[in-house]
Figure (cartoon, rainbow, N blue to C red):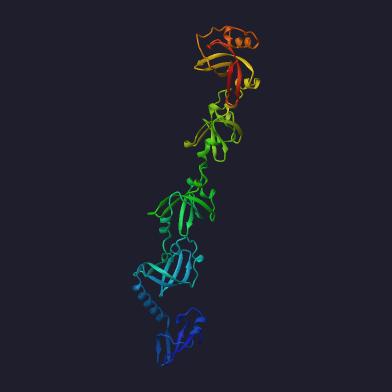
Length: 429
């Protein structure tokens, strides 16, 4: 080694500048000492015995020749061995017989790879498949995952709609979550398949990257390589059993979550809302808007009026819980009490009896011979008042043998009282 380069014996003393040595640093230059090299004479001054040589151009020409030979022999689909030369965000550069080929990040593994450095390192020796060769431009595309079977082909034969699978959430988008259920096989859970009861805006509101989840296969599209998954199907549809949990007549408590011009939505359990129509708020007055009675966030009591699982509807009523004359009657009387009422209707063996204003009872009798309606004297209130005070005691119409006729005042015994259902069952006195 000399200043600025190397002295080389070519039969005469020659100078090899460092810049033309074909090496990058001094350590590599030191390794050249004592070696035999191929070089080109680029200056020859016989008189001054000045000879300058160039090794780099020879190396470049040899490398170019090797590259050209390699390019000519490479064919798409062939398998080659290469060494990882360097890594980039989008893939790895592989030295294949003196030619650099690109192993794109998407062709490293059947599983999704975002950072090549998690899978490869400089110096790794790999067997790869040639995906594409552009001999004119000198570009080679290589694939590593293509050296193993496509897991999707196996998945298509094993997976069927309705199967339950587990996997890891690999990435999230606003419209859904991608879940790897087998190495290299991802399915997508659309936001619409994440909950039966909630309207999900973003997949990230329900799932997190790296989380393991259980899902149900909804669709297998072999041609497009797509797998549709459902999260809510694992949990079961709460609307399928809504009638069991909320039968008609059940009293519930819930929080008012939304108001509309036609009514108020009340959350009776997480994700399940019932609707109180404006006409079912109160019997005391006519209201123009639900906000006249309730506010958002207020807890209210209501009764279940009807359920429609197929339409996901739960109808509630509040006015049905207001105290009525029937409620007052039920509080003031008990089973076994003797009461007097006016017969409203006789149909077969069913006799409907008015026990007070807005209070009716039903009596099932054996003999319901009927005749013309009995004449009434005074108002119902006056007649009932007289009967309850003992004013009517032994009239022929009250005798047990007298046929039941509409308009009669008759005495009965209370057989049962259903306060919630507002039903009163009577028996002949």
